[in-house]
Length: 576
Image (cartoon, rainbow, N blue to C red):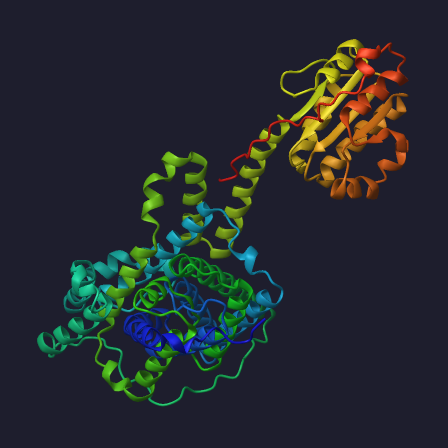
């Protein structure tokens, strides 16, 4: 694996312009997310600089722009709020340590090559989770939008204090926030192509505050320390409960950052017609978050908006992401006083618009039409995300979605477990096979399995086998089984054991590869004579006739050129 990302100096002009444009968009977003998290504007800026730089240099998606995002900020807000309340003296240091731990987890995921599995979850869960995060961000920014400090208690605390917030509204700051949101919506497309609407809102809101509200007490960002950031040595809580919470929070940040980054990488792939390296990207993201936490920055991940803008304005290699980070570094290290007069209400307006954009409105409008079960999962994940816990929401959502998917697959696969004692239209048989079954008159039982035999199919295997008791030879056809689960294997073993105990002949057809190895490890093949293990179904049926002493006749025993048939396979839909 190449250590650093791809940098092609043949596209210097496009990469520099892409990085410059991405930096212009990143500035207001970094300030807004830094303030929203509770760590301050400088933490947002340093998060944008450090996560962006190291993820671009060591990641696996050359055009990906990484910085603090809405979902990551929501988690950071909860982490900072908890630790600063429980440990006022060292709370912020503990929160930055959580960011470092999240980075270590992400790098571990990359080293273990788990990148391909991170985003393997149903869209209903992802949609509900992201929509829930968007709603949380909107609710948490309600107080700053109204010109007041956020109440304690997070989402629930804000909702409970909403009447008081509305009664004590600060008109001046609310007007500034409303102007910021309005500009984000009404900025013409022609202007958006030249200047990002977030920057327009930031500049216009600040100018309006300086010109029209200079005599009004308006909360602003204030002074940001210039120069290099202060090093934050990792600090761990001596309390066992607090340390466990740090582990849980860091794992949540890591998982969310992985999902956010890899989904954005897929967007970048579609725009550039390339393919990213998921595991390498996780290592780059982890290193970026580790360095961000080490120098007092908040956690970040791949940002869709910045990535798309970077690509559309010419960015093609990691040089664009590095350029963006260097531009932001110059701003935070040298020109920090320029951002001091920016009103917090303007940043709240920008953050609320981000929250609105995160909500998956498209799927919310039609989920109930697509599938009632999908809508149930999505709305359930939203409620759990907003009012309970993000990890619980994802865990419950994935569990329910998988159970429903397994149930559907089980029903489909159960229909492909067939016991046949005579010619059956549902299984394509050769003329010779039909004659054998007709002449056997129920004394031969053909047990045909088709498709993946997952654990849910075991009941169908037992049910179908138990439905027919009067037979003398059992022909178990596994020719069309690509996957044989342990539970289904044990169900097959029970059927074979029962047949052997009752003195019946057992034949197994088409057991090869992984199916054969599974049966050997379970000791099933050892119970059956070697000459009863055949590759052709017709051969097994002919031998079964001979053993039960049926006059087959020359027309049946004559070699049939028709190849062993298979049940027409259909690809069942597994979407939940």
